[in-house]
Image 1 (cartoon, rainbow, N blue to C red):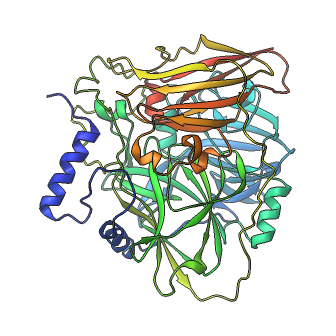
Image 2: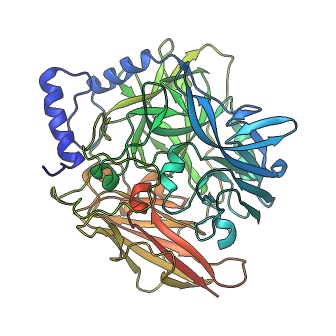
Image 3: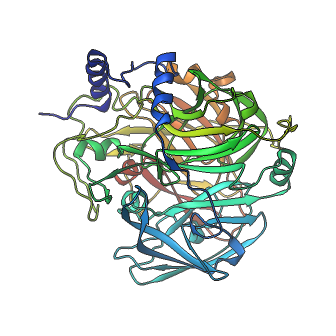
Length: 546
């Protein structure tokens, strides 16, 4: 029997759930939350009992200055994710000031230099990609250079990008999804005066009132070990785990006071998209989008919900003085249509070649025990407590963000599709590490028209080496159009970005400035950040020619 698409499975699950009176029965529709769904989400969050893991002075997600970092060891260790159980885990380990860090959250100022030696203690090759940074090709970590088992790799680069929350993760083609899934990823905060001004104006402190949130979905066995078992359908569509984690905490809660909090959110999942909202008493709480992948927007945008796809970041301000006293607030992912394999039929998996997927297992049975993407779920409960007066207001101006400009000339067309044989393609090509699929000229301004086939899936497209601006969306599905403004742009399209989600049937026009400071030709990659999609071919190598 051919495997069904997730979308068909979602619809059948909806019908079964409605018949059974299941608490999370929901319709495939344009997004949002009915009062009943919101009440069910908040009821789920009421049982959350694990403290949210916050950045600390050491340990997992411990905060350290990037200038103090000398060596990152890539190794196997154990951490507690599920209460009372030790989970084997991959991590970046560092030491500084007599303290040990696992996946350290790095702090740096714009203009500082990072010099670090990565030592690979795994039994497979790896490399660190500094996601979102405009590094030269050798320091980008795009997988064209690797550290084999037992070897080291030296990085040395200056932070020239805008202040933002970036992140770092492995990028060895053939091993990326498994290494990320098993733990290798953390945060890099780049600071400048505009960033410091926002913190001063709102009296924000990292780890206290400025909270990074890393969203991930994982599966565990009875002993608490991570499972990465992929059916043929899962590999083609992207791995979705059954437990939703925030900062590696399962069913977490956070105690907060009635003031403005800043939540800096990274979608660290392999493939899952979320539609985020803050709920209280069956209603969505308005909040402010103040930044995206490439830093602060020019001005805050009032929103009630937002999509976030793998690798994207959202910088949100939530004024808890607007919440009702005496009841918690819930960060949730709302119901939406994930639009998987639109019109692809049941034979899209024929002829699949899984390549070098390491120890990852791929049983034939599809989607066993899967929590559906697009299902409404609670992510984090925020408990409110009394607090002293807080007179601060969200500033009207955030940064001197330049206006997006459309380059002259005909856009370069980038077509996203699949080949009907289990491979995802860009302009009909699958990844070839030895071939540059396209060339751009150093210093050139270009617009690209990224067109997603209608019989497709959402593709979060990420470019290495540069950030870009989104100029226009066309053909967006209704659940996206309802959140959009002029030229079809979503609020998170209004700043610099390094990853843009392109929905089935949608075309997105973006603008690049390929200026850089490095001598010689530079080779990078452009790929889907659904990590399984990249492994199945949706990545190309491109060259910036001097």
